[in-house]
Length: 200
Image (cartoon, rainbow, N blue to C red; front, side, top):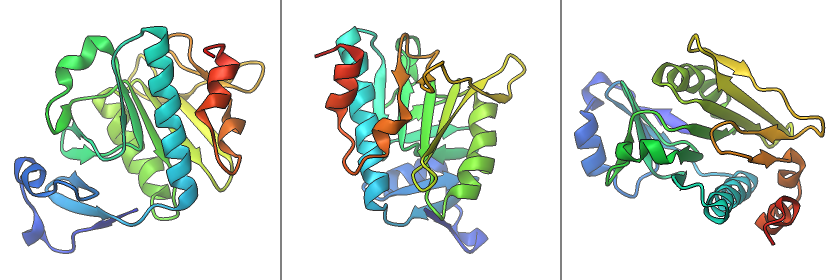
């Protein structure tokens, strides 16, 4: 999804990147700008669904914090990433600034595309763990899989077990569970999740 800058002369500070990348889908890694290629329809629909259902759940349960969709920067050491969806817990809202989150979010979600498979599974996997992102979900629309990881006490990601019904549960959003099959339909709907959760 992101193409790397070709020359070292393209390197800029994170502050300059933020000042000049408004409205541009890009990430910043060690001084280089990685530009985004267009999303697929399925990627967009799943991202929109997850952002809507997480925001609705947090709001209706009165949990607080912030659910953010792609397009907002998360500053992690030597990189500035844009997770497809993220959640920042109430106790970490001091990390939320006008144009970026400074430090780890509590949950990061990445939806794989052909261009992002290696980056999401290797580079972001490592960066999110090193920064202290407590949960990382990797969603593969083609394979129709959802892989949840949780940060261990030793600072490494470990696969999070599914519940008895094959659902993904969260430790950072109290009581939340997701049935991955909700995302594999042609048009994922937040109302399906709300009904299953008993919120409507």
